[in-house]
Image 1 (tube, rainbow, N blue to C red):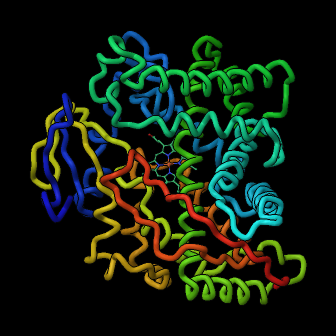
Image 2 (image 1 turned 180 degrees about the vertical axis):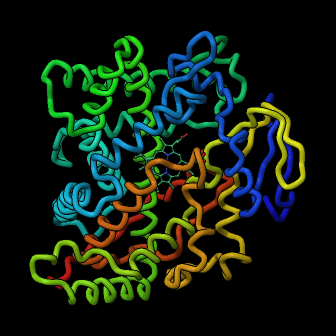
Length: 434
Ligand code: HEM
């Protein structure tokens, strides 16, 4: 985009006036501007989110205004309370999920030469989020978590460029042909799962050591009527899974793909993890997943795969300016993260996979796969923690061997809102204990 249209450009997306930004400094300026932190009104998407007549939309992703700010503050605090970003608490249960994931790989691979890990990785990530949100502990082979994962997958796989999203009136005229019915069914299934577990929480009076529990207790303390908070909570659960599961599991799959296809990187990472573990006491062994090289590797995977390559659109609340250009109120803003993470000015040889570029930490601030500012990804700490623990555990346990050669093609023009890692087969050979 940047090469073709420059660092800032305007365009029309059917009925929407849009401005695209593909330069780090301009994106930073836009994200620091409070007038640009709203989400646009995408009526077709809002259908499933109980919008009020005056236009308030519940939930984290499409909410705006004071209600959204309050919800976002609460959600960040709750996720942090539940251990997001902390060393020990979430680390503990994420680590348990990583161990379960390893057992599952061994089980699935039995008698097979190589396997496609994508489904298994997806369930492992959804199960981790599920535990944090509902406090329910499930095995990764449990049919319940597999069917929940399938329901969330259908939701995120709804193509964003289908007829009903581009021409919203087609959802009333030709609901089936426009793809609207399929999207409605996917959203309803997820909202129904969320409601069932909220009601279960209410009837069983489970511990408030989960997102649902903390949300319900807060609503009660603030005397919010159930008719109101129930909708908000259902949509928020849908948002957390919608934004948090496929993104993390796809990044995990890219990491495994890269490891299997780049033997040097895999070996360097293994040796670094071995070194990091060596200096630990026996009882600290389990915490020895982290090493500077692992952190650098994960940032390079996030940069290189750049799955949320356009983020989620923002919108100008009032007339404002960026980089000297006027932006009219109501303009939709698209932030082209891909261009920033492939900018040779910040990341020399951007097409090369080089974890070393992050070892000194100097260009880390330019690596913005989660964006920054008021609207930035609230799941960043959890995603990083999960990737650190999962990849650390996997590399210590397995040697990944590619079955087909060549890198997965990452082509943003061909995909939806999130890039996917094409299916691949990999051999997971168990290592001798470190
Ligand atoms: C590799 C993993 C992930 C990536 C690359 C990613 C990336 C992003 C990006 C680029 C945005 C848009 C920010 C903006 O518009 O300024 C976003 C928003 C969001 N993400 Fe993530 N994310 C990831 C994981 C997660 C996880 C694990 C969760 C939940 C636990 C999550 C929940 C959300 C939510 C709720 C929003 C909307 C926030 C708002 O509008 O206020 N994400 N994410």
